[in-house]
Image (tube, one colour):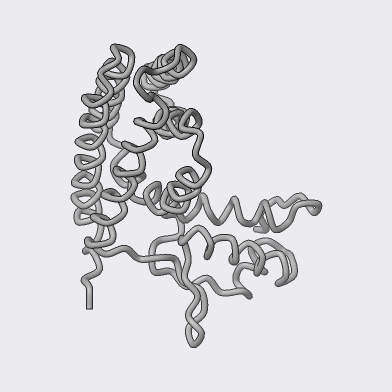
Length: 226
């Protein structure tokens, strides 16, 4: 059965559908994406599919091999370490840039609202909405950091990190812990203890790295470096 596609925005819609399928592992890591198969799925020509795949390459969610074609990215344990270590560094930097010597009222209020809505999503058992607000908590700091290059660097990593966080965020106990982490970071920011907030952010990202590694090992063996 063909996917429902708006003919005015073929490339954008195909990109979003494939991106979501990869991030949620409906299309597993290592899968080869064949043009003909995708053409049959979406009922369109090769051109919008190629455009969508190019964007996925830019997101580092698929890799193009000249003699193989396009495959969904596979991550090794070292990749997981590097991704969370670097994004953790960037998140801490965004926090410090955003807060300066003292956080502004708007930043504190926006973080508080994100946490409130996150709690509502947990109470409603609405995982998708909770994920959005969990991500938004981190993005708020970039919004107030006022550094477009910092934001661009973090955006480059975020797709692969989302692929990893989806492996463990589905479990209720992890949702509770992650939400508690965000609240502790928020409380430190609201009280003006920026160094403590940055330390808690760093620990939060390190813990997420270990959760991602454990979840990946449980679902499939991690690819070994060669």
